[in-house]
Image (cartoon, rainbow, N blue to C red; front, side):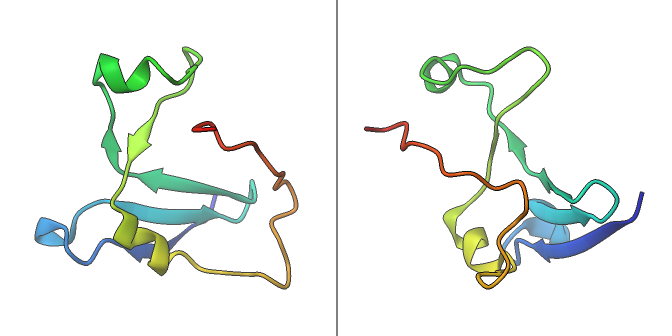
Length: 83
């Protein structure tokens, strides 16, 4: 597995997380961030036992690499869960 560091939250203390990586073997992304464990917040999300929910600051989105001309091969449109 070859992980590639894509971006890190520049405002995190000690240059820590949140951090985004790309795995070129699985063609997927890994997001290291803060685990959400607040039951109230999690109650509106169906999370299978083998998954978790992480939170990251909105400012990090602007650092995510963009490839508009070539969308991710497994990307699919989803509904807005807030609607």
